[in-house]
Length: 597
Image 1 (cartoon, rainbow, N blue to C red):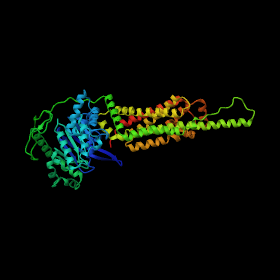
Image 2 (cartoon, helix red, strand yellow; image 1 turned 90 degrees about the vertical axis):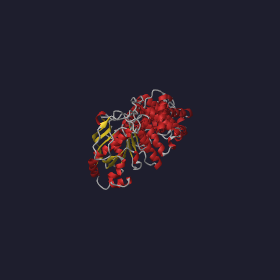
Image 3 (cartoon, rainbow, N blue to C red; image 1 turned 45 degrees about the vertical axis):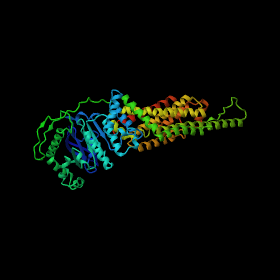
Image 4 (cartoon, rainbow, N blue to C red; image 1 turned 90 degrees about the horizontal axis):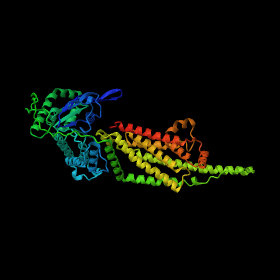
């Protein structure tokens, strides 16, 4: 039994509390199929999210099997299924792969045979077996809704919440989905609550909950709906609701509530007596009595049909979820041809750009003569010549190093700016279903680490092969790896903290754009500005560390043209390491924080 007692949910607007759900009190037994209807903005989805625990109730209490959810904690992930309005599957995956991933993330199976059996059962139950090998992107709207249901049913939830799963469908598909939900409610005492705008096919529901401006205007059998609102057709209900204030409808409902609740009890008893409904044996059922609102309710009896008792399911462990997520991420990556071609283009073109500008960096730097010349003019010419060589080579070497650093920063931004924000709705849904944020973030870091290592080492080896780094190559490659890692993790943190992929991409682009001017590698910044900005600029630390790895003569040439302080290599290593650690902490905070729309 699910029971809501005076449940309200309010938001603060213009300094005042605005109730979106207002004093809702209903009781829903197990094995019940209920529609939540009402005009747009009446609080249907808000009520569903409040039941799910996504919106903390402002007042009142929710009870599930006599457990106070407000005090004793929300539903366990295996008890509840939530099907949102948006698609919760990745387009490149097939139906079978989507359901398999959902099962591996939500259910700890003993072996592969149990896993396959659970997947096959869900596909058969939702009618998806014939199209199990199709990719999600080619499915129709109705098929995607079935897939969303299948991905929730893998954990055999006892309460299934559906938010507008029939919206945008043609009449035939809509009826098929409603019929499927009806059948699901008849299995093992499962409760199904469905938010819908449509007033079609109401006869398939056990009860209808009508909301008006957050208040309950009606909750009773669908066959009594038109009679209660004094209309000839269900399509006239919404205009009728608008004819008077929500408080008046709610007051009227409070007067008639008990009579309609008795009707629902009698209807339920008939379903159980006929064998059309299977509920747990512990649920008391009322005896059927004449359908007169004035009749007093019958006394409860012990009539019930025994449902099979199943052991509670357990969530998979960290490593199981991590392996599933990482495998799925690579599968999505290789099926996205656009992303694969983009990564290959970056790997090929960016190092080539560096080579195009690297000729001057390989020039010789003349040394001063060991013997002092008696010819002053000749000595001045020698000094000018050496300084000219230093200026040419030093500026070229410094520029090439910074060019590599900035390109790798750009790669880092491209790697991760949309990595979490781009799949935020799916991630939030999977987190609601029991996905550990730690497993999710670890899978992202592991995937991105492969890209970072490949990009950084390829850049270092390619440029060194066709150009030649004039210093300690290993140290230079290490700093390229660190700056790519730092920018990748920073942009991953931005992606985790932002609500949309567009916001994350824009902020990441700005961040990379400011790396070059604020690094001080091109023009020295004012000391007061430099002191403040330098600790936050990854490009400066990678450039400075690489310059310190140069040969002495080349290092002196760079210092002769760049009027900015260079930091010791250890300081550069620590700074870039700190950037990575801080970014990972920020990404963790963003991954753990709920960000439902």
